[in-house]
Length: 298
Image (cartoon, rainbow, N blue to C red; front, side):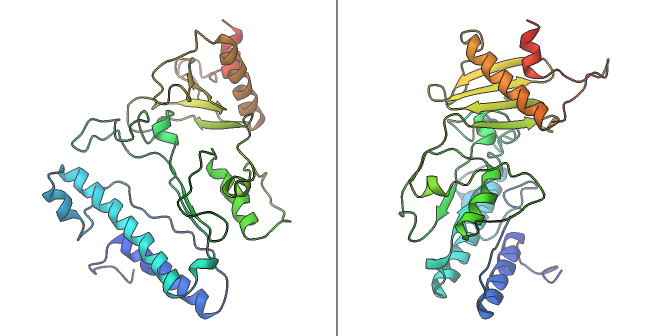
């Protein structure tokens, strides 16, 4: 409320609050954990001044110019926080993890072709294809990770919980919930690589608002280079080899029936184990079958 009516962008307001929290922790000589989740970049697309004008002058569509200004505003926010850490001699003892919760919005063309903004990944936010679920991540950990290094290791957002605890030196802890994630500290420090037999699961039993490639009610599994997408409405399946076909253009379901059956079984077993909610058919009110049940009837 203290920013209401003032010429302060929401991203800037959140940054100021974050800086205040860091300042209070520093003054008390206390360690800190700061979780900053910006509203940007998200609809409604609002111009973030003073960044907006230059993108408009570049000839971008007004919607894309607004989008770009919001991205730069978020980038500036992270820069402001990092500057504070450097100026107060905190950077060398601070870990920074930067990530996104989904792929970039692409169902809205914003003056361009829809579903192409995350090229070479297929589609975008809300999609079961890689454009909707694959995002980059940046980690700064002085003394542990070499600056400018790159990793191709694969992880999912639930891995953050055990990772942050390990980074903080917390080895013994109890939780009410089951921990689904796996710490990726060893991957960051180059000690191990991703387990090729680990299953990554995505489950979207509802319909997102937009339409487009990979957008719908789906369950998906990735194991190694292979990925299966199960469409609830049609009970159809798509099988992709991401190493050879990152854009997910070639459905190998008919060519690799053994791999299709293997992944469908593992996906079905997982969904049953966690009691995953499945949609129902409107006419019969019966639950959509598990993916392995569909193959068993063929």
